[in-house]
View (cartoon, chains in turn purple, yellow):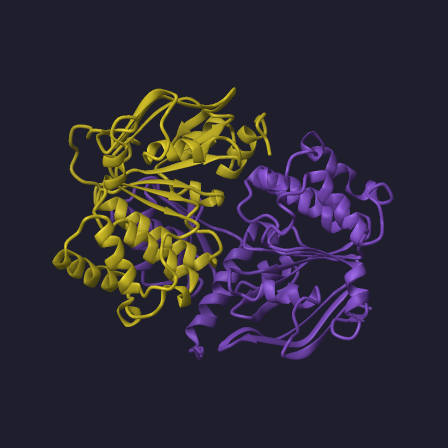
Length: 312
Length: 261
């Protein structure tokens, strides 16, 4: 039995079609990513799974329970961390945790082992009001409060947005340890590097699943020959690469530009290097490179956007 | 500036221009806590300057001082030629600012927002009309001129907010995590706007949590516990710390932080 299953889920807000016919299943114990920008439908899916919002069409289950019929049962087995900080700002760190434990008819002591590692980092601030915490600490407290009733399924809506790279890395290490305890985790993120840390991901755009697969399969599915191109100055490099006749697409990718070609030729790197050098670029370096999930996502977005989509 | 200038795009070599931002041991204390600890650096006209640091490192406090919103406790800084301590109002008139929480009014149309901010920045009717036409043309938003900003896609709002912050032709624009929440293509399109503005001579001062974006800056500073621990081109920083990416450089430095969240 899947831990989470969506079948043909759709939801509109007035004329805005937030989610359009989404079907997917998350296995028990899986770390599953919903990857996409704002407006892709991530939060709507989480709210439906957390029984806070009714879908217009389709069915969904969490831990085998139906989100409509069995909503009370789901609330006991799901831990939900909304994207917007939703704890009580004027309660202290400790009071918030005790409150959430009490609501679920348990105690902090009973399930402390599950949150101990995270809560110990918050302990020096346990008498501080939650509203006065920094972003990273708020995020850790919210995770503790979502875990304190020992849920089977954890729903995390953009837990790392606006959080610095060090805290993001620590957060993902924590998710790995929670997964090791058998908790199913569905997590959304706009950061493509975090998609690689999931076992499977769904790439979402405009309320639809563009593709669902393992990170490795997503990388492998990239359909174009791909080159990493470096030169002294990125902006003129991008402009000249876009004007190159064999270019299919060209995007900045950290220190290199990723250039996909319309067709593969063995001498493409040498040919391109000569083209760039002739246009005055210094320190030109061209080499084939394997695609990342971000390359695949951008290619899907480009294909998707090329087709006319009816706007409400 | 690196020695390898690109002949086709770089302007002809000229004497080093006067920096647009100069910090000299700029310091801000809150009680006993030193949020910004004697930072010193200079940013050149047209430079894209990445201002990085972990949450709590002091970036926001430093940026508020440079925008004339918070007086320094010690040290000095000038922005666009004005002193942050003595001329904060002049600074506000001569800089652009955009944050992740847009400054645009959601329940005004695109055109109304432009007109409003043009007025705030002291532009007259004819100048506002002229700038509005140019801005809408550059962004390809002519058809959306009477659309409420609240109903625009996030990526368009970001581009519009950036352009509106440049309406009064400021020498420098401060961008506080401008690209959050958009898809990877839209995020890169935003960087095209930054490159174009920088090529026109606008100085770009930007914070971001996307460390691939740090690679697109001319120079990057990394703040740790109120101090600037590293400042150089991305290539030089990677070499200095023996790191493959700016992400690794950042993790290496930020892990030493004591003022962690």
